[in-house]
Length: 225
Image (tube, rainbow, N blue to C red; front, side, top):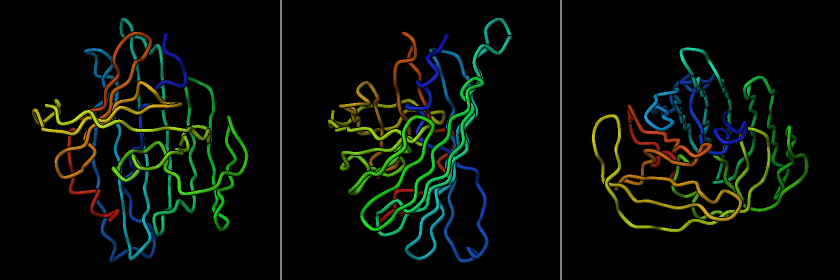
């Protein structure tokens, strides 16, 4: 069986691919990933980033099903929405079904603090933080990440391991390999030479779970900058 928090911590974010009212002139781009556990294809995630002026919306949709002898042994779904402005997270709304267990994360910014209400954490945090979505390499410079699954804040660091050949659905890509340290030690993130997030990897009960980009769908990182 799979630990119920593993995919929530490893997944990052994925997008619902929809335009919001009033964003007719916005730039919107979607990226799709396939999800593997060992050699088994177990699901999909997409991430849609929409920018209008200085406001950025990140929409999330994740769907995982681990099957044993054709029977679903583990199910995971997550839908999340983030709003960013000036490099700061203004709002987070997320709901997750972790194999029958309901999780959630909600956050609202008030000045230099973020008020979080989640299924595993409720409280106030300060400073410039990131979320467990990973879509911009700027997050690697931030030491506090908030879980989009349950609201938990994580103290983290990132170590640059240099360039590697990383497998994607479209073939091998040169990518910079980062190892996350601290509360999320064991998570590995990969960004191509343009700084675009193309995958991540982590342990899932003794097997490697991996997110590999299947459709790039345009540059996301440049929407951040």
